[in-house]
Image (cartoon, rainbow, N blue to C red; front, side, top):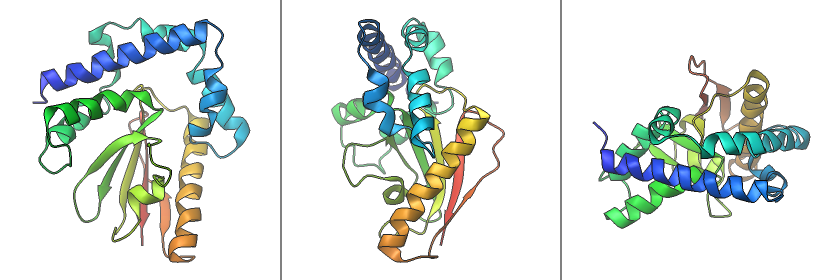
Length: 208
């Protein structure tokens, strides 16, 4: 059973984050244009379209006014895995302060990624990350990695639309292979979509 205190950290951070965003958007700030680059889509037009929907006044208002129970249900696709990951001894999060900061930060980006490597331990983080070199190649295929399955969730826990899913898979594939070609050479890695019954996740297989 996931730690309820840790789950509450995520829930409170989500509500705080979206209330602040709602206030900024309501005051006229163009958050969508500032965050357009973060969205996984094959074309600039699709990225901007997704950003404008995600950071629209109605969407921000809806998320800002969810109850704690509604937030918990909304984030059901990834919150339990995130809590278990943050509190496990296999991460570099050494104490509760670091674990709490990690959990709070997950809702402050557009996506949460979960990598199930073919060898090694599961890795979970918000996406985009903070470091300039932290791309999807780094998370799945860099260095001594042997690849694995990459799962991408919206940080809001919401479903991906069909067009959004297709464009997202194409963007993920392009992003990983573009860096892989420069780092490892052409043809070393393959990226293939996985069949998913859950509309709240986009998954790809990254293999050598």
